[in-house]
Image (cartoon, rainbow, N blue to C red):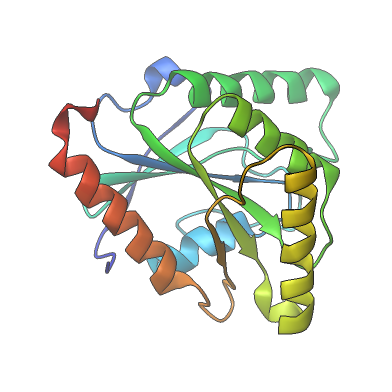
Length: 206
């Protein structure tokens, strides 16, 4: 897939105000500072489509971007902010939960994980919630240019082992990416295109 157009549509914290279009949505979410905005900008060929910041927790709303006029990329607030109050965090978590559990247009979520680190409990817990809630998702390992392939393989193996130990039957589909070097871009966009083809083939899915 080639992304020709990427247009910001709306930001809000109320799922009922999300676009009414019945177009497939792909939600991107991860821990603070995982490189989500950089990845989104790399995928869409826009340097400033998603706002990047050195301050974790910059994204605090549900952000919809219309891609190629036929699907939405949804940029969600991260989980596990370091520098927001408990009250604010609980509000964020509530509308993230509302989005995942009520948004009919969502066909796949991408959970972003920084590949430089070994399996983190917060990521395992969040994916556990996704699995228990039967929300379809894939994993995107980010910042692959920062460590060796040996370490990448080792860290992915650690995630597999951890997830199997937590009663997962199999590892979710995953991608290894780097926003800096465009690693994984083609594979990720091709995957979205394949899912879109299935969605449009079965228009009654919604």
